[in-house]
Image (tube, rainbow, N blue to C red; front, top):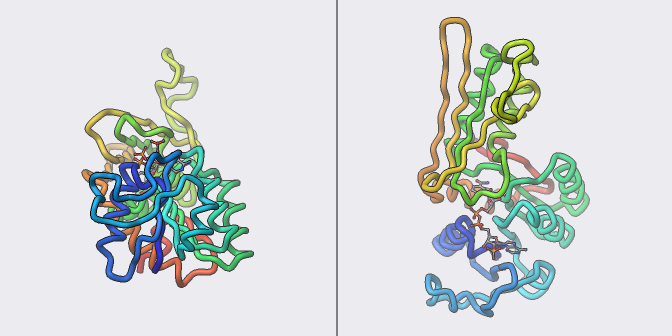
Length: 263
Ligand code: NAP
């Protein structure tokens, strides 16, 4: 499969390039960067042995390199625009970039369906994180009092994380909607109780040294339950990315969430 990587110089994009190169059934045909100074990936020290063209514009890359699938790990500002361009050109997409809104997701799904093109967007490609979300969804049925603490490296641009948002959405499907905390509680410092999603609270921690971590903490009379997942290295996301690249070939629509393609 001819694969292109958008955001190849980023932390995730770099790992995706290595993953595509290591896969026997994939060929890296192009990479995309924001206003690149290079014309070929071999001008980047880590990839000096390769011969792959670098592009600065998605449309130009799709036309010249004709990838069958584009993997995008860029920034919340451009992730949606890139995905739209990829799908409008009838090219398959695997998108890990976070910050895509529910409305944008709906629009992208409609484009994928009209073009009969496979796409997978996942806020978290780590299998352990998907299990954490599923376990949390199950627990929320019995423990409606819950708070999410997500912890990421301090260069992350969006908050809360896409994983925290997705976890809250999944729990909202099983959890009895209740308002948590004391009636009439007051924040003496604004934001102290975190962001609110359907009555649940989400807290975002940003620190150097972290990669991607999340705790879902449930409380009930006389007992507590904590579900935690840690990504210590970006390799943790790569088996999910590789699976998704292959899976898009079998799809004619957009799927949101890795859990929907796992057996
Ligand atoms: P990063 O290191 O900042 O990488 C982003 C890369 O995208 C940078 O090289 C950046 O270039 C490039 N870029 C920015 N605008 C671009 C454009 N218009 N065209 C092409 N490239 C562009 O960030 P990261 O840690 O790799 O994370 C990337 C995204 O993936 C974030 O949204 C993050 O939340 C998400 N993420 C998802 C998962 C998952 O499992 N789904 C896991 C981890 C992270 P410049 O530096 O030159 O601007």
